Image (tube, rainbow, N blue to C red; front, side, top):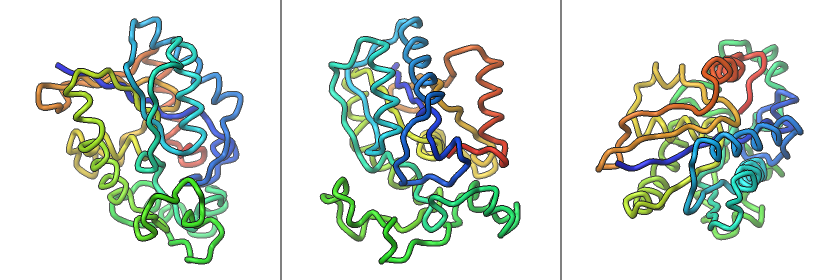
Length: 249
């Protein structure tokens, strides 16, 4: 049997302001730092340790991972960063207020953009300064692979590819792996691993800063998953994520 631990980054400045985040790169809030530290303490107290870790190339993912590893006295382990673990790209919605977007386009359209599997948000124009093509952290990525907006289905494809090619071989070698990523990235990964149907996926909410442990069989398929922490507190954090008036992607 294998094991892998996933963690969603702590609260970011855009989360606090209730803005669409996507590939934007806001920092953690003080609450987000506290969530990351608490996650590290939970993992250490539960006896977990890791051989290597993964993060996206966005600072809220990287800093969350660093705080967790510092609490565990594991800052020395190798860390691999990849854009394929970035949050779902919200296209032209990035940086916009969710509440104002709901007023402009309606709650139903907002829900479709946030939660549907196949619908993409309005795409960024090629000359939009928010387009990541000219961002140095993506200089090794083929321009055609850098999205101008993604559906959750698009995110499932890139995260699933990374999981299968980069992470699964390490797990098969009995490496103990920690992944620090984002709400939709982790929803996409869970959908890929568990082959969730769309209605189940739409109801899936991953709370911030709570370690999610997966037990995997010999084929690296999920046997079970559970969150560390007090169940009532975890459920409350998940409800906060589900609340469209205060969502935290």
